[in-house]
Image (tube, rainbow, N blue to C red; front, side):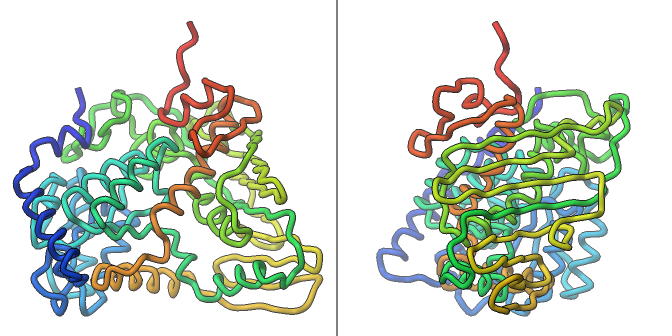
Amino acid sequence: MALTVDDLLRDMNRRQFLGRSARQAAGVAAGVVTLAAAGSASASERVRLGVIGVRNRGRELAGLLAKFPDVEVCSLCDVDAGVLPAAVSTVVEQSGIAPQCERDVRRLFDDPTIDAVVIATPDHTHAPLTKHACLAGKDVYLESPATCRLAEGAELVSIAHDTRRIVQCGTQERSSEALQDALRHVRSGGIGKVALARAWTVHRRKPIPVKSDTAPPDGFDYGAWLSGAPVRPFNANRSHFNWRWFWDYGGGELAHWGSHWLDLARLGLNLEWPQRVAAAGGRLSTADAAETPATLSVQYDCGESTVLWEHRLCSSHGMEGRSAGLAFYGERGVLVIDRGGWKVYDGEPAHGAASAADMTAAHLRDFIDGVRTRHAPAADLASAVVSAGWCHLGNVSYRVQREIRFDPDQQVCSGDSAATALLSRAEPAAVS
């Protein structure tokens, strides 16, 4: 039987955790809100970071963080030994300091000198790893989406709150001053009343040809990689990067990009949860091994406003002249956003330029400053859980092939037990 994250962490030294918690509580009670509260000796020292998951995005983030003079990327962790050398080289190139390499995440959580961790692992491990990082006294930079199942969110937010951890989620658009200017323009009435917003991503992704199951590659701890996901034989299609197109581990293109663009739509229209969600789409080829939809349209009914999501993975021709973005359709103009900036069309002219690189750097800077000063992060966990939840609701509607109604207080799909069951697990309930 494969080990879950909970199994891996069950033997954490409880006395050590309770001792850290007591010291942190005493510091908070005394009004001490410095880096010392996060496990370091002094606010003047470097923030010491561990990065968990370093194949792609994690390696990139490790390199960007290693550039900061007040940060030391001191430890890298991955269940695949083969990806560690390149990640080490990236950190050394930026900082001149070689980090330690670990295969066992417990070593990072048990290390009292590590102040914070970056979690850039597959989506199905986001919530459990963040939970245990918080319980171990570590602040967290968590790649989006914040959760893999909607039902994970409430407990995760509660644990982060109770442990007083800083959790910054990887929706870096929240740290773009230009894009936040665009949302302020919408909220201030710059394009009049907005009853409709539309978010999208359109690009070509290669189909995943069917492959046979094999033994895991040497150096790849497949049991640890599975964590709490259903136990299946190893298949190369379902691991590195492609895991996101399988329900066991991710939510497809909607979770991958919708967690960014729907987050901005919510911010621009001051929305929490939708009342009704209806989705339709499908796969384009039966020879494609992926499970999540290659084409998908989702309508979110939020009462006075409607938000639409669309993705197509067979084309390079996007909407509003952009391959990915967000549009607000107002009474006095249309405001369109992408990662290059924003512009108002068919209304009073207004615009602003943005940079994807700059917003990522600013987002990481905001996290490090939050670790030091304990200020609330730009992309707080509670809000990121809601934005991820929108993605999960869209996927659930697609999977049950009908409109669903969501009760945000009870966190259930009203009158729909099959849809509600999918909020907490990857597989549909068995038909008796």
